[in-house]
Length: 420
Image (cartoon, rainbow, N blue to C red; front, side, top):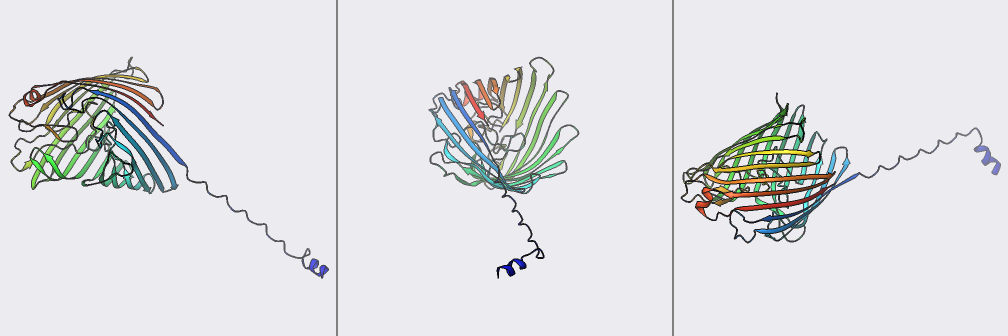
């Protein structure tokens, strides 16, 4: 029996094929971590030109953010970001300065990086951030829930989005909700021009129970805009015009703005001096009772677009803002600027960067609102580390003095920021 068995398995028998090795398991998706720590101390002697405001004085803020990005597949990417924003010494319940711990971003991207759809909680910034910004100057950055599509078609880049503003709850953790009456939708196209680049956009904003010079009501505002920007042979420029239409409290909206920055940079000279003039104008409402709201709404802007001392916003104003910037060393920048603000329409007041009325027109016919002189020093001793010091003296002018408290405002802000 044994011999028969061996014979059956002898040389005439087929040799079994070698076992195939299984491919090694795919490595888990690589996770990329990034983060941000910002410590800031601020002194402000008066808020909205009133030194008796209880929130004036010295306060400290801290922002800690940690984000993780991963590619789950060639066309699937995810991002999650946590943020903790704290404040002591000012209004500790302010939703723009305090958020104990929550999700800043949590989204998935589907599609290649040249054509994707992003779904979930996300930050968004458009162009120069005059109308839609992340609001980095405050401790709590602005974020949204919704969907965004992005596509690169040759030299043209298209973005479309439909978003709802996240409502920050200063106390508690992981409890931020959605603002049911604050929506943003739009389309933006970016494309090259003979000099620099152009951006064209349409935005729809929904803001229920909005308070304005014409009263309080539901607002549906369309913003149509065009931006031209670039640099050539030392010159640089950023010009943007927008027109707004829509409905407010049963009436019409007809508002506009023109914002410009034009400057020259001597890159080959010692200290690389840079001179710039920003000239800006935005419509106001010359007759608040005529059924048409004409005050420009800057929507969701960078609050510190004009100055870190963000007192006045771009509504019913014209403004001149020259500045000088020097670079004594590659990692050291020094700047000096002057901000001059006037009212455009005498029947309208002045506004803060978020679009809230901070001083009604009263009976004053004066236009000159404020003159502010600022200096800034920024030092980056190593990659990812930035130290800055800002000082501003704001001197209220005729309109402010004629309509209420008119205290000068001294503003000093020291910041340490570390990113990785």
